[in-house]
Length: 346
Image (tube, rainbow, N blue to C red):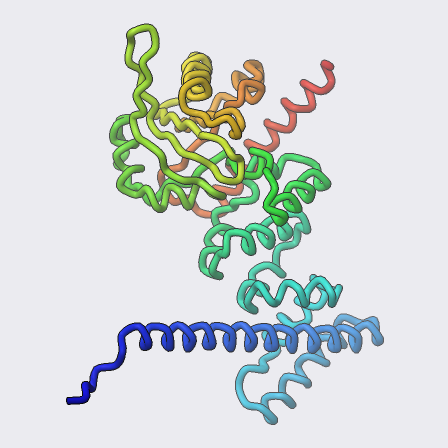
């Protein structure tokens, strides 16, 4: 008697072909749609430049919007046409943008084109492609000011672009591209008062979100990593591995301000990890001290980065963007001043 049930292997193979086909169709539609919007934007820009009058540009867009809406229906508002115009102005090189629209959606581009700083835009663009961020994730990163929180944002533009090129080529990148000056841990839902153990347990409970906030290439290895030194037990809060940096990352969580003594403790952890845990092909371990508040001058005087240690503040409550921006600007100004003073002393 013939069975009515399909061959299960055949079904899954056919399903796989259909899903791949649907994905290719979706990518093709997105690329063609984005290409269309870029060419429309370039054409509008050429017409506006001919007149050399901003008010004429608004008139061109308004009239064109009305005509296109009559012809094609909804979807051709003045706002949308301004998106197209901004797109072509921000990415004027067809060869470059044609490579990008095969990897990013139109909604990605809409988020990127309104970033005024070229270096910041390049950072998000490269990270978005390499980390395969959705538009929602990209917007979350922008809103949380990821670029401003990343150590590399304090570096010269040429150095930033060099590191982004290494990221594209899957080469080993600088820790400055990976580590932040501030981490936003609002997803931990901590109470007003909490202990270091509370903080660690909250991180473990939300480990997926914590790794997303840490950034590029982190993999969780261990909690309360035991180290036996001179017959005494020492415990590291969290141990990660970073694929991009090709090294172990030791994280210690502190609930107060940074203290100078934390450096010696972390150096001990790093030397132990280098001796007993690191593989021959790996770079030396790097440490991250996450403190509720930093003491920038102490960090500067200790020259802590020369010991392969980074110090960062964490934020446990969602801050209004204006307040977060103010906090980061204050931090950046002081950090740059200290760096300039150190360079003058050399």
